Image (cartoon, rainbow, N blue to C red; front, side, top):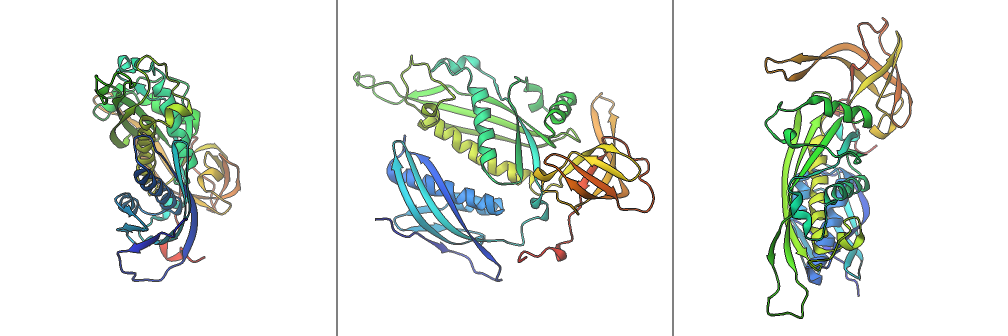
Amino acid sequence: MIKAITLLILIGMSTVVKAEWYEVMGYASTQGRDVAQARQAAVKDAITQALIFSGATVSSVQSVADGILSQDEIKIKSHGEIQQVNMVSESKEGDQYSVTLHLDIYATKGQCLEQQFNKQIAITQSQLMQPHQARLGQIFDIAKAASQRLFNTLNERTNAVKPIPYLNSAINVKEYFSQQFDYNHILIETIAMNSNSQYVLLSQITDIADIDKLNNDYAFWQNDEYARSFKIDFALYDAMTYEKVWQQHYATQGVWPFEKTKLIDVYSDRFWNSHYGQEIQEVFNKVSQDLNTAVSCIPTKGKILYLDAEQVVINLGRVHGLEPGTTLSIMHQSNIITSRGSVVNSTVQTIEQVKVINVNMQSATAVNLNTRPLSNIQLNDIVQIKIKNETNFDLDD
C-alpha cells in the first residue's frame, strides 16, 4: 500500500504568496544501494528537479539534499519554497527505483528577475587526462559519452541553462584550467559563434582509476568488483568578455561491477544503470544545479547581427525568453591587448534602446526607441535585456 508522505515545515511563514502544485518523477539506481537508500535517492532527485523547475534558490535545493527520508515522513530544513509534499506512487523495476511526488511550491522574493530569461551554454567534449586509466573496461570513449550525458541532463531540466551540443570535436583544454588569461580566447569565441551561445563550458576528466578490489580473493566463485573513481573539473567562460566566470571540481566513486576483461559500451544503458554510472549521473545532477545558480541572475546578452538606422537583428530569440515588447539596451565593445599579450574585452554603455517587434527561435528584430537614428552602432555590438523594475513585477499575475 502506498502511504502519503508529508513534508514537515521547519520554518515560519511571514507572508502569504501564491503556491503552485508540481508533479514530478524521481529516479535512482538500486545497484550498490538497499531499497531504503534507493527510495531516498529517488525522492531527493524528484524534489531537486521540482525546485529547479519552479525557480527555487540553490540554498533551498541544498537544504532538500540534506533532508532525511524516514518511514512516512520527509524532514527537510527549507527556506520556505516547499509547503507540502505528497507521494503519489513508487515502484521498482529491475535496477531502477522511481517515485512520483506532488509538491506545493511557492515563490520567494529572493529570486532574481533575470531568471525569467535563459542563457545558452555550449557543452563541449570533455578531455580524459589519463587515458591509460580507461583500460579497465576499455572505456576510452568515456569523455565524449559523459559529455553527451551531461548535455542530456541539462536539456531535460527546465532552468535558466539552455545547453547547445558541441561534442564532435576533441579539445585540448589544459590551458583553460590554468591561471586566468593564460589561454587563447579565439577558441572560446569560435565555439560561441558556431553554437550561438553566451557561454562555453569546458571540462577535463582527471581520474577514472580503479581504487580497491571489493570482494575477497578467496571467494573465487565471485566475479571481481572494484571501487572506481570519477573526478572531473568544469570551467565556464563568458564568450563576450572571455572571462572564466565559474569553476568547480567534482569527485565521486562507485562500484565497477563488470568483469575485468569485459569491454563496456559507455553509451549503453547497462553502463549508466550500473552503480558507477549512477554515481556519475549524480555528479551531473549537481552540475545542473550549480550551473543554474551560476548564470541565472546574470543578465542575458546577445550580439547585433544586422542593423540600419531604425532597426537591428540580434542573436537572441524565443528560446532565450524574448517576446514582442521586450526592451534591450546597446553596448559598444572593443578588445584591449594587455602588456602580456592577453585580450581583455571592454564594453561601454550607450543611451540607445530598442524594442523587439518580431521573434524567431534564435533571433529577433527590434526597432529603435529613440527619435534620432541609431548612431555609432556596429555589427557585433552587445545587446542586453532590460529587466522591469521589481515594483512592476507581480508574482500573482
